[in-house]
Length: 436
Image (cartoon, rainbow, N blue to C red; front, side, top):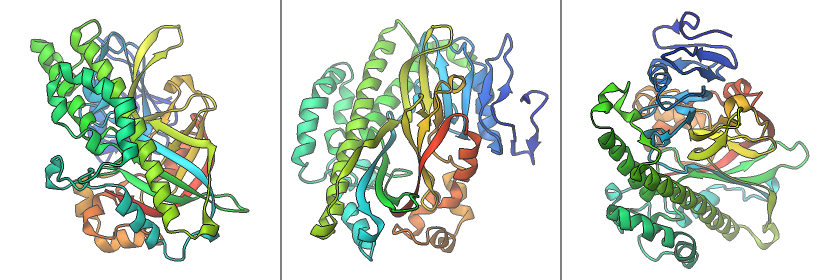
C-alpha cells in the first residue's frame, strides 16, 4: 500500500496515481483514514484537495472514507465518495440531486427486431419524456416539466405515494411549495441525465435493455439547497474552523437534523418513483414505433432501480451504526444488482455486488468526469463528438459537448480498478441516447 503523505506522487502538478485499495491518506490524531480503489486512475488536484479536506473532519467522521475509481471534484467534497458520519450529516456531501440514480430493465426484444432507423425510437422517447431545461426552469413554462396536462398515472402516484409526505415537509418549509414537484415527476432533467436503449453482450442473442439516469429534480434541489444553507447558519462561528464551508454539518438531535433526514427520505422516494414512471413512459414510447410482431415484455428478475446520491443507516464492523452518505457511489451489497453507466459512446455495466465491507459495500456510480464541463467544451469539437458517438442515435450538436464521451474517464479502467467490489453481469452498448 502506498500513502498519500510521503508516498503518492503528483503527476505534472495535476494529479496522482495509486494502487488498488490503497490508503490514500493515513489516519492520525488529526486526520481520518481515506481508502481508495484507484488503480490506474488519475485523480486531479481539485479532487485531491477535497479528499484532504474531508480527512480533516474527524469531529464527525471516525471511520475510513472510501474513494471510488470515478472520483472527481464536486461541491464541498468529491463525487465518487462514501462517507460514514457519526452523530451528524453533511448536506452538501449528499448534494442537491438527492436520490439521483439509475434504473435499467432487460426486455425480450432482440437486436434484429429494432427498426432500421433508430431515429424513430429516439424521437419517440424525446416526444414522450419531458427533458432539458428552458426559461430558467420556471414552473409551467419549462420544457423539462409537464407544461400542459400531467399524465393520469403521474397524478395518481403523486396523490397516493408522495403528496402526503410533501404536505408535512411544506408545513415546516413553505418554500418547497414553490418548487417544481409534481410537474417534474416522471421527467428527465438536463446535464448528465439520460435515457438509453442498449444491446447486451450475449454472444447468441443480443437482448435490448433500456436504462435511464435521473433523480429528485427541482424539489430535491430545493430541499438540498435549503439544508446546505441551514447547516452553515447553524454552525455559526464554528463554520470558520472547517476546511471548507461546504462541509458544514447538521448535528443529530437538533430540529434541523430531524427535518433534513425526513426530507431526504422523501426526496429519495420521489427519485425512485420518478425513474419508475419515466421507465414506464419510455417503454410505451418504444412500443409505439414497433410493429405488433415486435412487442416485448420486461424481465423483472434483472430490473434495477438504485440511488447513487443518498443517505442510509449502515452497520460497520464493530456493530456501530453510522450515517452512510454515498455521493456518486452505488450500493454493492453481496448479490445486489447495480448499474454503472459509461458515457454517450462507451459501454455500461450491469454488475452484482461482492459485499466488500472496506468500501461499505459500495462501487462507483459511473465513469466519472475527466474534464469539467467548461474544459470539455474548450477541448472537444463537434466533429470529435460526432466521431465518438458514431453508431448511436443521439444529439449531435454543440449543446452536448460537455457530455461528449471524451469528457469522461475510460469506463474499462474504472471497472478494472473495482474488481474486488463488483462482478460484471452484462456489458451494454447503447444504440440510442436521449440527453436533456
